[in-house]
Image (cartoon, rainbow, N blue to C red):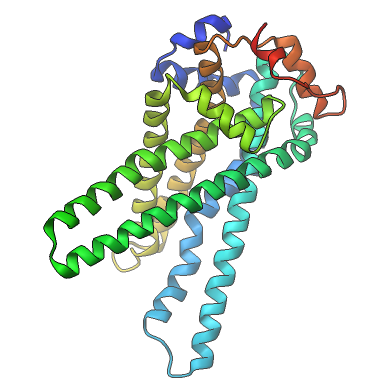
Length: 318
């Protein structure tokens, strides 16, 4: 990002993607190691977990005559799902922390290395975790509302109430297409804010809400594009690798699976970089300049070099 801060607000979606893709060239070794140790395990787990859960789920569709065996199958499935979600959330936050810190260090002209990124992660992770818990509360509320309208939809189908059916379907469509995408954009922005500014948790979500104003449409397109690509990758992986045993050979499934994991690694890495670049775009759009010297010192605080910023005014009003 060699553009002047005041010019970042004029970046289009194509420009944001172009700037994001170019970032790893400035520190290829660091991003290679971040990708290998954090982004790759995350991407692999997202796709490969279905290879382990599918056989168990298939057996549960045709339960054994032995109730004890069925209980063991359920216990195994739930245990695996719990471990998978724990791994997914942990590596998602770790990868976010590493990517945001590294991009910010490059932007501030700070020395970048994989060792310094790893050293900063523990302190960054705590802030991201608090923010994630607040986002989780928001998602719980969203899912409760979504579930309520699903129940209403089933009731409308059962009673053959056309008006209620159309209303429920419309609300569910809006909830997913608008609310879900917006919450996802809010979460990604809040994650960057939690690392680069002296706020986290609910305060970071509120700050993200303010930053997204005027750039909500761009954020929605980026998030919807990311979710859409991930959905297509998952569908192909499921069809060919997980359920394609009868029509695809073992070698073919391995090749396709490996290729899709590689594609998802690239998509996730670019997604992490985009959320960082988009943060600077929003800051520029709201004329909140970032003093690179102050940002340099703030990042140094994660490494024990400097006391972190005490007021966001220091970054906004310069």
